[in-house]
Length: 76
Image (cartoon, rainbow, N blue to C red; front, side):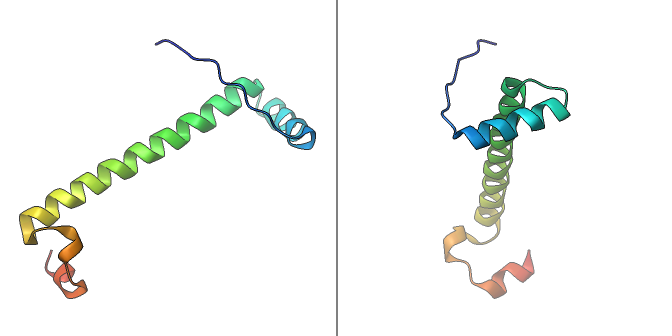
C-alpha cells in the first residue's frame, strides 16, 4: 500500500507529551499518530456500515428510517 506523508503542527507542550507517550509504548511518534488516525478511520467505517445495515432493516420493515415513530421500533 502506498503511504502519504502528513505534517501536523502541534504546540510544544503537546509535542513533548506525545513523545513521552510514544516512548512509554515503545513506538515512534509517527507510529503512534498513524495508529490513532487508523483507529479513527476504522471507527468511522464501522459506524457507516452499521448505519447502512440499519437503513436496510428500516426499508424492509417499515419504509424510510426518518419516518419511523418510536413505538414502531419496538416491533423490530
